[in-house]
Image (cartoon, rainbow, N blue to C red; front, side):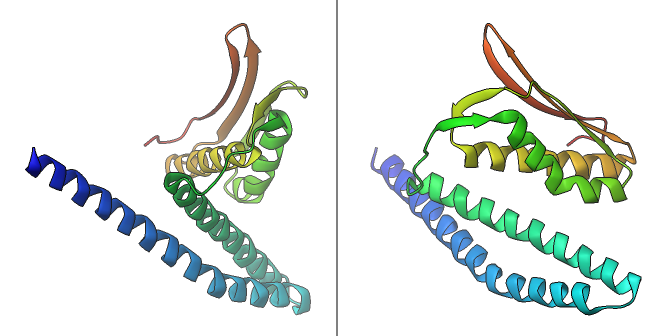
Length: 177
């Protein structure tokens, strides 16, 4: 029994250290990324050449994606540690999906991947909107990566309501994981 107790304590301590490390590293990434984004914004605004503006815009978009990933990591760590309080509120899932799709739309367009949303405009749920946003962003990002890897071309977000409840699904014709 003592060995089991010691092992569980060691495991809990290791998990706590990993979460602290992840939170610290994620936080430290934010400052240099903000600096890179500022430089990219300056490049986009001041450049007279289309190629430079296009590359600056790409740096901005990728920087925003990295910042979202870091925010997701930090939020996940806070949730696991119990420091993040969920605040459920009436959330329009159609609007949340539209916002998440807009975040990947330029990368999807450049990769010739169509993203379709099939959900009633009034599809709402009592849920923490940050949880929906994080989940959809992660699923769409993975779907986009899968489609790019397979050189396929369709991502579909489908929202439905029936007697059993509400379902929000992301599917793609990509490689899969």
